[in-house]
Image (cartoon, rainbow, N blue to C red):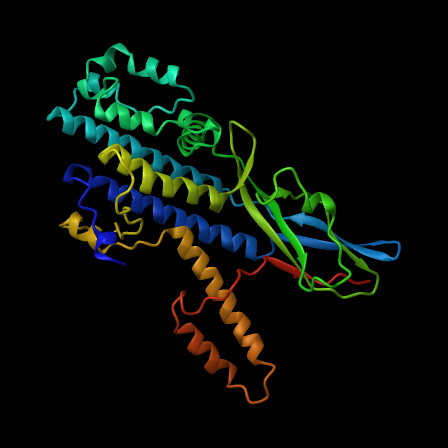
Amino acid sequence: MSLRDADCSWLPDHQLHVVATLAHVDHTIERLLRLTHDYTEHGTITFAEVSNGDRVDVVVQEVAPLPQAIPRLVADALTQLRAALEHTLYAEVEAALGRPLTEEEAKSVEMPATCDAAALAQWFGNRRRRQLPPMNAGTPLAQRIERLQPFQRRTPDEHPLRLLAVYTNVAKHRAPAVAATRLGAVHPDDPRSGLTVALPLKHGPQPGDGLPLLEGDVLASAPRGARIPFSVWPTVSLQRPHTGVWAIVVNELELLEEWVRTVAIPVLVTGRHEVSPLPPHLDITVGHRDMRAALATAGRTPAVVRSRDRIAAATGRAGLVEFLAFFPERPEEETVRAWLDSLDDHAGRGTRPAPAHGKRPAT
């Protein structure tokens, strides 16, 4: 990390509060990902084998119920991300005015998420908002707000601000985001095997974001009597409230957290995002006398990346122990495990995460 990477002098003192909010988001996402990983790794899917002529089908017998903490932790993280934006905007208005806002003035300060320019113009034209000079159309702060609007993208419904607004509006007024266990992939460990995977699971309408996973679904089929290892990759996915599209929860959180932290907040504060990104990881369970000094030493690896490193490292450690078992002059297994446990997640990680389940279809 260079000194320039660590330089967050662009963040003024009146905006230091957002560092703690982002750290809280990071901690919440880490809790969520640990829970999601534990769920997908420990008996998410129960399989059954069904004879089908000269083949054996492996079908879904049961899918473990999704822990209800998962959609609620998602709601917590997204609500705090939106709060980070709202608080940043509020602090910018007060800084521009040079005084605290009155109770009446405060009601007009919020972050819009509009899908067309006319709607934003109407938003700026609000009578109470026009009485706040920093919020008038054409001012530097108004231009920054406009730059972040969903209508600036060719597909407004996929803009991060639009996603953040619809998720949090639904979570606040109706229910947490709809979350479900879905199927990411099924593939044979040996591509040359006689295993086939049901086409609907390989070529769904939304490849890569998790397909429906229901009791009775055929996951794979193999010749009767064959024993073919294969891997099943379940996902925990969210349904976007406004489009119905499913997105893998870790990918959705990564997209929104990164956008708020590296694009939205810098643009609101400076008018540009080409600045040193704010660090995501800071221990806020202890008090910091100097938040500026804490910012300089905060961790710069987001929870999603740390989670991937942790999973890859665990897979790499387990794989190396299995690999060494084939050698007659191998070291004691306890010695190998102790050495691997001494490595951090970067040094001990493997090349790919482990699937949640494997099975050998047979008669």
